[in-house]
Image 1 (cartoon, rainbow, N blue to C red):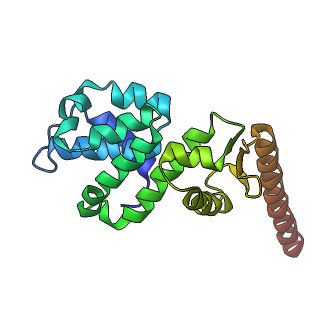
Image 2: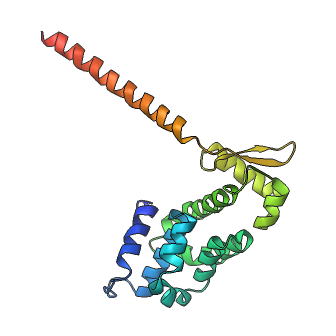
Amino acid sequence: MTRQFKAAAELFLNAITTFTATEVLSYELIVFYTVVLAVVSLDRPALMERVVENPEILATIDTTPGLRDLLTSLTNCEYGAFFRSLADMADRIHEDFLLYPHYRYYLKEARVTVYSQYLQSYKSVSLESMAGVFGVSAEFLDDELSGLISEGRVDAKIDRVDGVVFTTRPDPKNAAYQNLVRTGDHVLNKLQKLSKLADVEV
C-alpha cells in the first residue's frame, strides 16, 4: 500500500512456502503478488533462483493467465515479449484492489527494470536497434528514455543526433565519497549548533 515493493516481495517470498491463511488471501493471489512484485524488485539472478526455480510458485503460476510469460520473458531477456506480457497483465493489475492505486507507477517501474536490465549489457546501442528489440518505435523509446534519464531512473544518456544510447554506470567509489562529504557536512553543522548553544549557556 505504501509502494515498498521490494520489502513486500521479500515478505511474500519468505511466506509462500508456509502460507496457509487462505481465508485471508487465496494461494493463487499470493503467487500473483509474489511474481508481480518480484519482477520489479529483484535482479535477474535473484529472480531465477528465488522465483523461476521455486516449486511452490511453479505449481500455481499458470492459474493466472499471462503471469508465467511476464516472468520468463524477463528472465530469458525476451524484451519484446515482456512488453507484450506486461500489456496483457495490465488489466489484471488494474482490477486488483491492492495494486489498482499503483497501476501507473507499477507499469513505469516494470519498464525501468527492463530498460536497465537491457542496457547493463552494453556501453552503447543504437536507438533503432533497441527499439527493434522492444518492439516499439524509436520515437517512443527516445521520449520514454529521455524522461526516465532526466528523473535519474535509468543510468544512460542519449545522443539524438547519431541516434545512440550510451550507458553511464554509476561509480561506487565516487558515490561513497559524495555520501561521506554529505555526512561530514551534516556532522559539522550539528557541532557548530551545539557549540553555539554551549557558548550561550556559559
